[in-house]
Length: 193
Image (cartoon, rainbow, N blue to C red; front, side, top):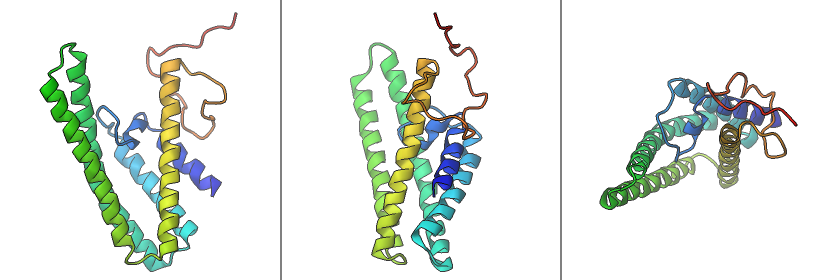
């Protein structure tokens, strides 16, 4: 199981726009993210099948349900990225339009609620072909994956801001994630005194 997580996380953090995995990310999604997302999804499907002990029929249904709902989630995440971009632009001006900011906050909250509803609808559909214990295990595994990706993304952001700190909070290298990824003009390592 650990090998599957390492592979999935390596794929998740190897994209220049790993923040695209997070629903509240700002900015435009890089062009290579859809292909990366597909690789992650495939590894995830394999992991779910093994972990939950799914039959061929169940595995096909889970993949179909997940893929359909994920397409909708991707659209909503894109809307949230766009809303966050607009909020950042509005706040950057120094004299934000409070009405516009309130409108964008409301749109973001509504979009997040739509994402939550998609999760509930997906679970309801899965209840038709997964046993209750399988559904619980599926939800647990999904939360674990989201937490691990979020943690890796946080570490990468901290490294970008902090200039590649090392220590207990830094992610481990060697999973294929950071090779040659230092941003152009990014901070270089400081020599030790």
